[in-house]
Image (cartoon, rainbow, N blue to C red; front, top):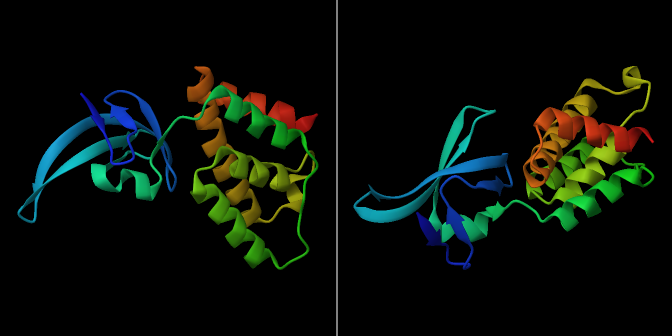
Length: 168
């Protein structure tokens, strides 16, 4: 089934999409459902990794930021960000962590790549705190999942390729 959201973006069953707060998911169905007396058209998105299903009202898809997988050129720009020099601000960790979380939840692959680049530690993982490692792994996972779908490779292979870019 092929339907358009209010933004004009068509979502199809079986295609991958990005939900900013959860990352890459697969559209399972586009269905009508009666909720509180009114009929809503819903996009049903499955996140296999998290074993989660979201039902997103078609009218809200644009405002929450549901989007198709990025183009290869956008993913290439994100990889180029990884090649850059880490920019760590000299502010308290709690504020930086909040900024990193906001970037990750924006769903923007370039912003997520900035988080991965800034938190990457080449050899000394012991120098990272637990929360730094958690945020780094979350950002790397999100970026790798979208990179994998965009380039039609496994998530593990995508993660390895991204880490290789960081290590250079």
